Image (tube, rainbow, N blue to C red; front, side, top):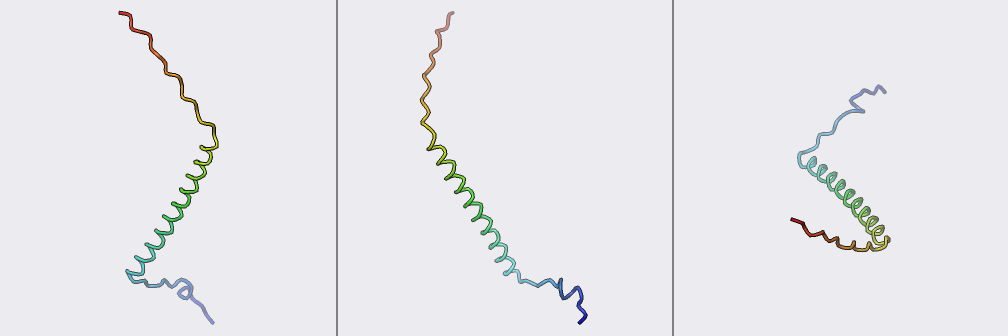
Length: 68
């Protein structure tokens, strides 16, 4: 059987609605993965922050009165 490049590389014709649905699906997948990564990073940073000892408030510095 002689096979040509058309049998391997024949592009499918998608309707505009199907292309829009495909684009929407891909965009949602990307947004969901980014949101999950952001949530994971936030939880990690929060855990690290809570593991540190509370910083002490620095004493207020008073200025010397102006001599004039």
